[in-house]
Image (cartoon, rainbow, N blue to C red; front, side, top):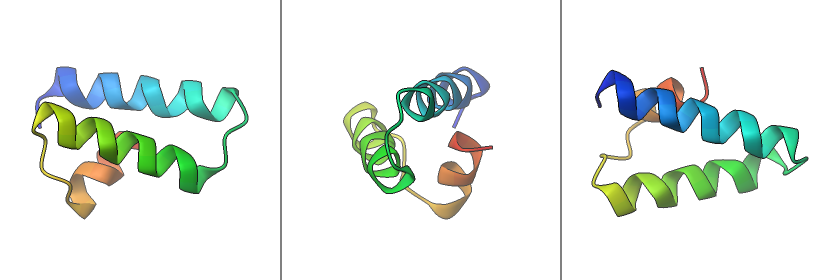
Length: 51
């Protein structure tokens, strides 16, 4: 995953948290976006998204 992609995912995760969504729902939405853009859903990539 590129630095640009991880930055976008971190911003998405931060915005979902600010909106008050539970972590589990935010994780599902982030994983869905990752699937749509072709980013492998691995523990390392999810950690980078929520770092």
